[in-house]
Amino acid sequence: MRAIVTGASLGGIGGAICERLARDAQKKGEQASIVISATGKRPELQTLVRDLEVLGARVLLLTGDLTKPDVPQDFVSKGVEFCGGLDALVSNAGVLLPNPLVEMDLADWDYVMNLHARAAWLLAKAAFPALRDSQGAIVAVGSMSGTFPHIGLGAYPMAKAALIMLCGVLAQEWGKEGVRVNCVSPGPIRTPLNTHYKDPEVVAKRNRIIPVGRLGNPEDIAGTVAFLLSKDAAFITGENILADGGLGRSGVNQIPGKMGTFRQRSLD
Image (tube, rainbow, N blue to C red):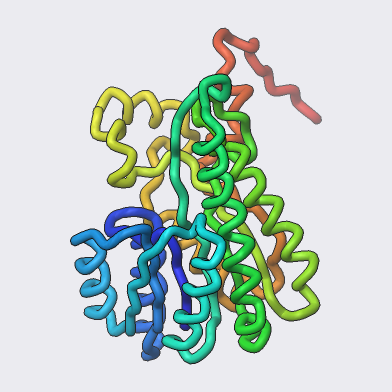
């Protein structure tokens, strides 16, 4: 597996994806080559690199601001050179700048949109030749907020909606070239950035409304991403997979009050 994973962080979704890819390769007796990217150098990134190397992977760490137009191409060029080709691109880099839209300023809007949507397009565009050669795949990490309106999150829901549509269009354009493109949209996930999930009361309230009865974890998303990148998903493209424990589809069940009692009728 030769992969580029943006937005990699220890304990987060990006880090879990990298670890899953490295572990899967190790189980097959293969060596993964993984390029991880982050906005800046942080001590925990070196820990992630070491963890991946323990799993037998070759790792290249790149840092830079993906909202700058030349950075995605630079990352991909260095990644393809390091890996000797490319089998997978995972666009996971993202940011959340919460704000009511009426209070959000233009600079924050542009930054969020450019990081989630434009950078993903530029990464995919740069990676296309190598992915066509390998008949590889792209997976973007979206959000259930890109499908269901979520107030107070600033431009984040619109950016994720654009990302989901980007994957759909790329899948249509590149399908005959052998490049598959899909999106995974997580629901509530325990990550280091979601500090509110350290509050047991908050967790209990979330658990009550999620049909599977619990918050997700980064490994839940990593497993879905790994599947979509694998040959087992060779006939799947253009999809947006909601990995939210059923939360997005349970809206009607959150309406207060009883809806009546169902009675079973005999068909004899």
